[in-house]
Length: 224
Image 1 (cartoon, rainbow, N blue to C red):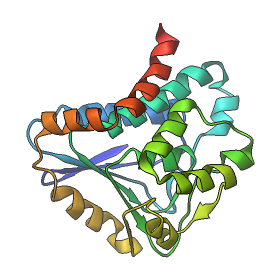
Image 2 (cartoon, rainbow, N blue to C red):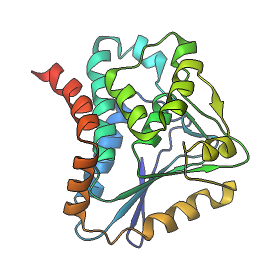
Image 3 (cartoon, helix red, strand yellow):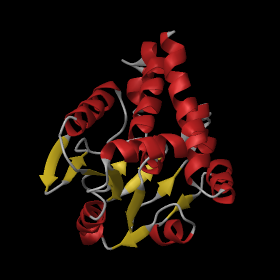
């Protein structure tokens, strides 16, 4: 993970190729959020990737290999990450420079706003085609952030959405040219960087009380 600051906006850049989720990647993400949250004063957060990928989902090779013994704990850590971003004490924007697939797509949904490149790149939740069930927390965040008909289609069909389609259906708020994804996202985030951080966090906690309870309950159940 790389952290860059532009005024009051912090950019968290995922720089591991396809940005697939494994333990080192997840730990680095949490550490980066710790660093940003420790900053005092107004701030906003933008997450983005490099090249063709925002995040291409789980690192299944790691999960079935080195991480096999900690799969449940690891997935709970992913849900905890969603909860952190959903209730983040600052405005958040997912600047999707490329593909956002499976847990990468759900990561984008945890943000306050989503910006996707209009020309190439897919947003998709393909678990139905991969033969993988969704955890309750994953279903909860999809339901909380998407119109129910769109959530149904995305989950049941595994459809891949391009930027224009995703914007028309409310999956993302903006679809722009690739060279504008990051600058547009930074400008959008900067517009809201002066929000009162404690109040914003409380408002998000209230707005997503039920979703956050499901995300955090799964994480807590493993540690109880």
